[in-house]
Length: 325
Image (cartoon, rainbow, N blue to C red; front, side, top):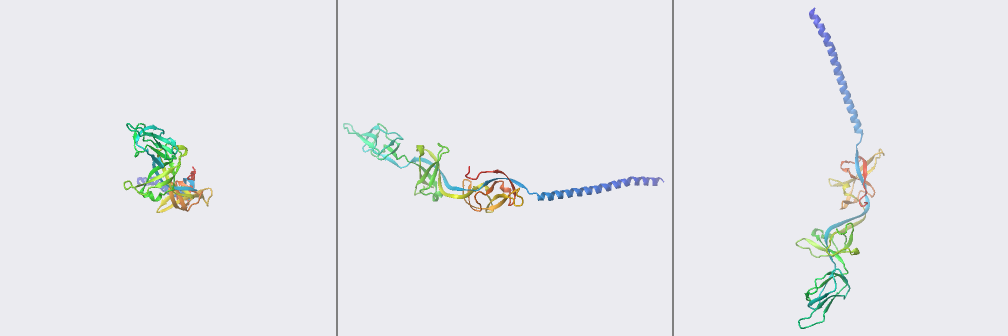
């Protein structure tokens, strides 16, 4: 009797426990299935959504592009003439100063050729050409000879830039090329010149060739001895399509840009198309486009490294085209 009572007591306790465990197991399975089903639903929804990339764009422009050599040099007098006295003697009068403009046959210096016990008529030294006085080696009281120049003249005040071109660039230099000149003394102002003379020899020590550039001296602002920065224009093209070089993606020997256009499947979105191009002259971060792109097409200039053909984009900034600033 007592053993049966204990049996029924144990059975009465184990029944509810087993039922509870069964409910827990079934509930956990249903919960797990519910979680897996939700993850799959979200994953399939995520696959349908396309990412949108923030980019900056600009437009290809048609204009001028120039290739040049950047050099530096000193301003020197152009064609110069040294003036010599006709006789040896002592300088008694100096009638010009540095920077004076003189005319042909104007008297520059008076030289007294007298000797002890002998008096002579003073000899007048005249200007053989009209020009500007750029040097006066003679001074009053100095004894001069026929072999020593007393005044140096620059014909019509013309100035030149004397510069030197490295041997590897001499094939690009020739007489008649135009040049743009800037000086620290006149910031923001540009002077223009022309290659006047090219040395026929190369210095074997420095491996450079001397080049002379005649300069237009607007307003007589340029002075002999000034330091100048020069750009000799070696190649110039008009009406070419050009873009910032930063817009170009180069991989595996190919070059392309991403062109912005409306999404044909949903006009509310903007997409990019991969466009192979052929580049030409690259100068000052401007690239000439020979093939593959037309003027006024909008291209990505920043953020293109993450893009692929057909990617959706959001244009956050539109920059002006090269040469439009």
